[in-house]
View 1 (cartoon, helix red, strand yellow):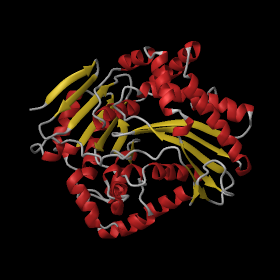
View 2 (cartoon, helix red, strand yellow):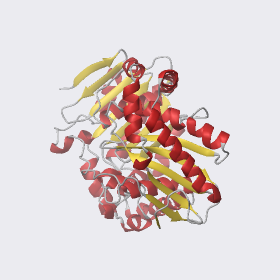
View 3 (cartoon, helix red, strand yellow):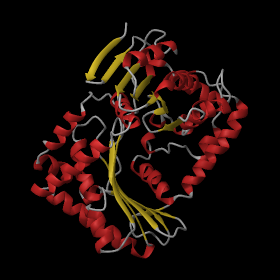
View 4 (cartoon, rainbow, N blue to C red):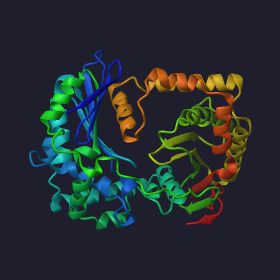
Length: 430
């Protein structure tokens, strides 16, 4: 028996006995629908020798199913003006589409076919493996991407959170169709999946299509709960590491472990991060770029996962100025940790974050992502109004506590990539 609850005026969630969760948000003012299937297994669940298997499987399901060739998959929605895409993150693998509202049944049919019935042929693997190897090479040729992979690896060297989502050339070259089929069998079943949709649809109509596609079939499986992420060891903090590369700039990341997705302190973290490096008005942009002219690109970032989070700063600068840039950023970290945000500064930071949260939900695709995330990370649903009130209610002490704990310059692990010994990371070289 399906258990459906109304979470908000136009938002519903249904849990089926076999473990699958279906969420939707009706937005009748548009003529489109965004729909996706999330598999709650991804790179965080991979042993080191199989690094990249979740991402490779995500590629391989596009190569053909029992009913469709790769070309038929490609044209199935594009021929109607829609789009079909997928991605692998650390905590989940997603397949999603955006189509006209009338094409919702077609979109779910195509995604279901790919997720549930891929053929996974050896001949396709030999070709698609080369595509993924080229993707890995692209990252290696993009230093402002590679420096983030190196940062994760430095902070969690022995945990899958520190592994590369794409895998390495060595691990991807060693993966077989047997590895892909094994992952598919243990992860791509209804109880380990979430279906989320947003746009001009009704929840009842969505449930009918989900049922037609067989997503409610079968009983619950023992592994219907999200697969556990291996226990996360303490992150490596306060170290510096430089990776020698022949690049025009030195790319530097300051980072530390923070809080998981479902932790309520994430809103205080977002507020502080916005002020620190969230745009042209941020402290880092004004100090590092506008006042000192040390960099063109500088920004802060936050990432929240099931078991942990990460926050920090990226900057790209001339190698000769890397040390000065890193010191100026450390000074700003120390200032934020020491002072927090007071009075007008906190009010302005809240307003910026409120505006970003509201603007981020302007599309059906964004609303679909938000619904899926609540289920992926086992977070209780909170309406946008509730979230906004939480941000508005943040106190100086709450924000100061987050700033003091996570923006302490001594806590930051600093990873740099570039020529001439870096200047940003210090410490050992690789």
